[in-house]
Length: 457
Image 1 (cartoon, helix red, strand yellow):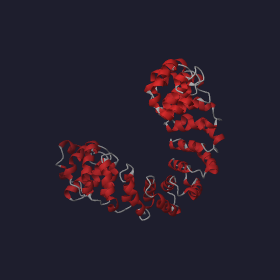
Image 2 (tube, rainbow, N blue to C red):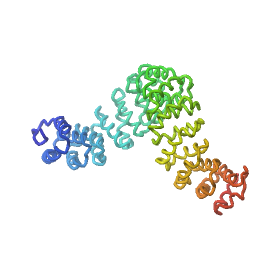
Image 3 (tube, helix red, strand yellow):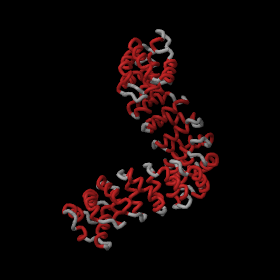
Image 4 (tube, rainbow, N blue to C red):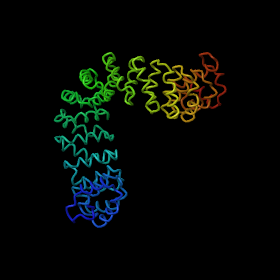
């Protein structure tokens, strides 16, 4: 049955959805267009639109017809399905925005309005546009166990925590022990919400769901927000006892180590975890946190070799390289990986951390020299350029190669403490003495020389 064959009333959307799944949209595109020409403004056409949008995400194909449908039915209760499907399919929000606002005036306090709020927040990331309506709905539904969806998407979309703080506090009073409350607390903390508001709910939730496989995300959010490790340390250790070899345990190990937990209490577990997952992309969190917390390169050396073989050019890999170098790991172990990473990401501003760490650890300058010079052409006035210039000069790099970058950086930052220190390095690179040798700066342009003279500290 195609849409054109259905009776005037009683069209079942699931039948059209099944045909889409079985035959694909191309075969039904013509019959659908014909059916919509005759029936596109009918109330129950809503379900045909939803099926099409959900299966294809082709919003432009039905944009005009949906506009007509909204003019006639946009305030109907069932319109919520179409608004949600349109937004989820990536449709232009301008098509539904005015009608949706009108719909919320009529239905905005009904329980089902949460579907519209969630769809809007999830797909537009614009919480301010519906802030008033969301606040009113949450205040009216502090007893609704499904309200967690609105809190989670509000916070993920960047909504202000304080806007939902009062209803959330009441909601958690009654729902802190339900599993979905863990996600609400996690997103509240990740969104810089006040720690005190969820302190007791987190404790209550962990008492019931502390062995939940995804509790590691809550552990990390709690510690990242400044929560005391001592208040959840026992829960983390119990969780690791049950899930310590799961991929998700990477977040728990990282959280423990970043919060200055005793590395020895998780050392054996980290070693076992790396034996299982050392080449997994998520292992980067464990390598980075372990090296920063311990400087112990021995425990991670062998699994890191396997990780490099599979992940050397991922953008975040540089943080593993930097932590390895700062922990005095051998440059040769990551030499090829650094070469490959720089070839792909070497012009990113954050590459400055790797350049500085590589040269600071005694890595061969020739491996990154051309990449550094290209980086300085792009970022010569960035605050981060001072670290690259400093590492270059301290590593014996030629002044002439970075003279233009040094000059441009000084024109903007000469009066800062970093400018003062970098100026002394520049002079020392010329004279070989740790002194402020004005003659060493004479080859700079007059404007820079005047700025340096005025910025004497």
